[in-house]
Every structure is written in C-alpha cells, then in structure tokens.
Length: 284
Image 1 (cartoon, rainbow, N blue to C red):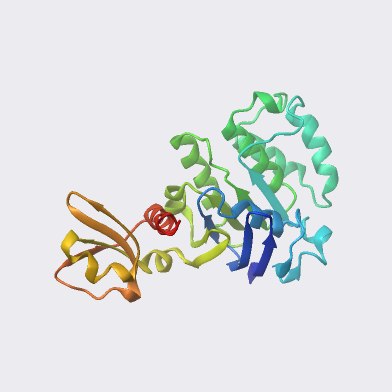
Image 2 (cartoon, rainbow, N blue to C red):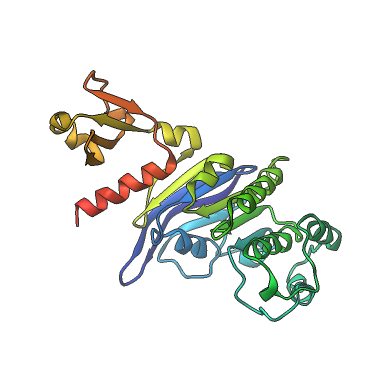
C-alpha cells in the first residue's frame, strides 16, 4: 500500500514556490526528505498536514484525500519535530493530559511504555528537557494514538552524534513490522545513509529525484580529471569545482561515457546536494 501519495503539489509565495512536487512513500519504509535550508521541505510538510492551503495538487494518506478526510486521517498521523516551543512551563504530564483528549484511540499503556523506554520524567517541565528529550517526547505522543504515518521535520537537528544514533535506532525499530511509515525531513544526510529506504530530494521548490536509496545514489557519478580535459565534459556536468589537483564534477550516470581521462566514483547524498547548490550559484 502507498501510505503517502503527493501529486503535483503547488504553492506560491511572493519569493518562493513549490512546483509540481510529487513523490510516494510505501507502507513500512523510511523516506529521507532532503534539501538545503529553504529548499521547501517544511512547506511541503505543512501542505501534507493541511496546515497551509495549497494552490494545486492532490495529497492522499492511505488512499484518502487529506483535504476531504482531514479529521479522520490525522488520527493516524503522528508529527514530531526538533523542538517544542509551546507551553514550555508546563510539565510533561500536564501537556500529555491535554494532548490525549484529541485522539479517539489513545493508548495509555503504550504511552507509558515509551516514557520508560525514552527515560522521560513526567514531572519535568518542557523547558527543562534537552533537545533530544523533546524529540523523544514528541515521538512518545505520536506513537501512543495508533499513528501509522510519522512525519518528522528535522528531528535530529541540534543533537550530538550519540543522541542522533540512538534516535535512528528507534526509527529502524518502528518500521520493522511493516505497519508504520516514516517521512524524515533533514539536511543531515549522514543520518539517512544509516536508516532510509527511499530518498526524495527537493531543490528550489522542485523534486530533483525520488527513488530507493541505492537507485537514487547510483543515478550520479563524481568525475575526477585534469583541468585541461574539463572542456570535453563540462557541458554534461551538473556542476564542478577546480582545485590544484584538477577538477571534480557531478554528472548523471546516464550522461557519463567512461574514458581513460577521467576517474569516476559514487557520490554520497551530501555531495549530490553540494554540487546542485553550486550549479545554482553558477547561474546567479
């Protein structure tokens, strides 16, 4: 089953717009939603959650249109983010008491299990929680009302490497039984290399590529060569940079013809984003 289906999403602001954003997340998998800051990740997520009105497109969760079945579908969607900026003087138990009234299938036993698992102290105020604890509290809330789709907007931002790794283990555990799906927005691409099954890359409000992680990365090559050979391949490169050893450029695999003049390697997610940003800079 397709858990999340975004088709031709458009949203225009005075200085930014989403252009025909489309991707699909199958049930039981983690999708990394990547892009530089300002690329459109949060705007897309707010559109999916119907927090902002869209200018065009169709958003379906579990096959149902979000706009037509919002109340029903939000019972099955959990949203967690990198911080909690409301009711910071309230204790965890006080905020939870309010939160659970919005959900028909709140499971107190499940909630308490996650409180113990995440080592959260319910008498602590939100303001007293570390960034990592705030994320885990958001997850505990999301997972305690039977959510089948988790939408996580920069959940690991600001965490130290050990805390990030612990959280990634939690995400992997959640999808093991094939019931829960996760859309994981981040610019920390190394996290996704550890846990994501699919990658969707948004750049300047447009989807550059959306595919299984291995297929996504395999669509590109990093080319290394001598500066004097750059002109023979320059027009096919997405972007390039020159250093004292020669040049390095990013190219679509389908556009690369092997040659003794060049060495090719497979880029990581961060390198793909960096070279796309260089292409934009070159056109400014």
